[in-house]
Image (cartoon, rainbow, N blue to C red; front, side, top):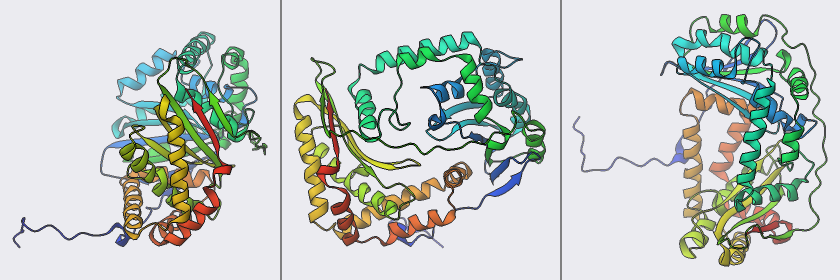
Length: 428
């Protein structure tokens, strides 16, 4: 058959695609650690994540969870931080640590052929950190220097303030770093946090890629052989949210500054609420992608900013909608006026069908990209598993994207996009 290159191929709407979430395989190590696996033979690479309930939600003093997660990699009873990093780099691998409100994570990326060689190093980091005093001193110095620089930036301050207004300064979602918190950190308190939260019975392992045939035997050898750090039951406390009473804020950070940071935010339902998927769709139209209404008006038409976005925060206890931008000092107030103008449009006008279709295709296209390869698929499963959800959550989202109506979006806007519900902040 001869290909006619003068004729464009037939266009297929993303709505017509049947999206499926590739299933995972589950194994259990000898000590009970669950291992979730998405295999792939496409590339000789592996991504491995060990996840623990060691987020900021569980700390008893500021920055304790972050410092613990960070310094686990900085020295064991056998090797210094330099030794550990050089060993990892020798194999062309990458070991990253990250901390969120709920979880602390260590992620290893490596070639399949080096997986076995890296297991002893990873075992030392996870099972045998010693939190050296000199490394803690360096950590404090670096963090305080970074904080001092960041506090001069309007956007950094705005992010800190808006979280405090929404959730309260003592809540994990609103708590911020400080020089005093870093100074108060001690090795013994980090060791205590580590011993309680980074234990075998609190560990979940997520794997994706092309594994050696004996990968489960290797995991058992280094992580499943005994009950390392003992058994610890983590109780997630129910912490009250204490939002600010006042909703209008103007903060001067630099008298001579020419730019300001704008934040407009309110609490919203999170992933467990039946409106959540529809709220995400509404928000995408409103300010959730480059072609959104906020971008079209405030960037393209008015020229007030290089970019403005509205984002749905999806925390375990609650969600939030946050509209953020940086604009010229003289047009910050005008920017806020236009944001509320676009809210009113969402409430009073039905979204045209062509805009609905565009956003449907955009969101389904993003989902397709998230399913492109084992590394992306395991991230989908990790988010579901850690939040006590299953594949029905994924398919419900697809159903909403394909079928939500303009009338439903208008009803949501009338319920959730009311000016009186929003906290409003400008930092200049």
